[in-house]
Length: 318
Image (cartoon, rainbow, N blue to C red; front, side):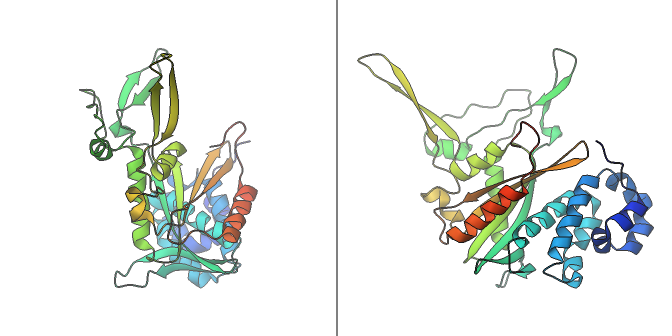
């Protein structure tokens, strides 16, 4: 079943919490400009309405509205803001109290997105989104059935790490678009950006909204890319393989993990609209090498809520 696109009347009366954040007068004045972009966002607007209602059970509108208004009104940032609201709602759903846009507490004038009291501990979280779908960086190929697809050259191992371990790096194919850094390195940079917003101490969590991209790249960012060791028995001539991870992940116990010691956990989130429905996928990644690991009770509470909120499309783990 496909939902009808949202119009102004439906927006104002069907989604009162979201409209309040936008501002009813602003929506009425700007509707001719934003209608084309907003009208097919109904699944995300429906989710934002539920999330904002949940947040309002712990905070007054006077604290919620200024936090999210500019992000929602910038329609190009609507989905990013919807992810931020959703991540805040996920934490708020098991919290006794929350604060939004909390000052970092140093001279940087930075702030992080939410602090939530969960089972007696304060969890500090910052939300980031990632969208790995830049078509301009890809090579258009005409498929065998006349359907175009896109491809590009991109390493799975960071060339700097490869050089440090004496691993040769294959140069890009001439004439094809190529990126020099793997997606896992880009994700680690996103995590570092989030950590720059968060305090140096305490329980720090990144709410990682993965709009498009392969979740395996987040695994590679946290644990290192997969490596295969081939072992040859010179007596029997048999060759066996052993799979492992390259030691450059953010959660590695060695030097590669040092910049991420203040990161207690990552919560991966994906909101995917299909046929009028919004499917929700989550995964909790705890950092066992963190200076402040996530307490067991808080981790278990988060995992229970993640399991309860999960709505996967048939035959997919997103």
